[in-house]
Length: 278
Image: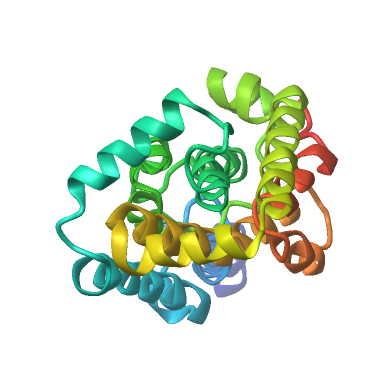
């Protein structure tokens, strides 16, 4: 048997060792890249797949929303007038059968109708970022047309941001794409919101104001809770507008300016906001 010299043996095994080393380095590099990618996803609040990891209770704005939801519930349970169901039913009947005829208190009538505009505005702001959330956005927003902040508040508090990558319009559901992203719908909301603002402000006589105060303090649980509901819905609007601005590559610092004018300001943003890419 012919002996193999040490030099020849090293030459024979060197390519195999080099190949093994390269594969090991490549594998280690791949694992490092994967770890860095997973870490980046977990630390980026705007990533689309962080809904399960998003810790809403660590964000002061979300804790404030949850606190507002609890406070509204406490007002409804302990502070609002009680035993007014009969009066409330007649009040709603009057508003529905004689709209804007001056039969019901015009200040409350404007406010009551605004509770139809605001949930529609929230639908326009929230549903484009509804994919993969912990709570069903369509259910929460849809229920808010009847239950207001009681329905949409938990979703506002717990939802994960959906800004990057921005969803394409073609990726949205039919209703979101054709209704909530529609400029025609936005113009209609702004028009009705502007009318309600005009109707309410133009009827701010001392008599109507005192009548409204009596409604919310003594006569109507519906009026009291509805008023507080609109206040909370409007106060929490700034967070949703800011997220929608980021989704459309607009500086979110202007969100407060739109939210500062209840009902009308957010509807104006819907008209002016850039459309999502197809």
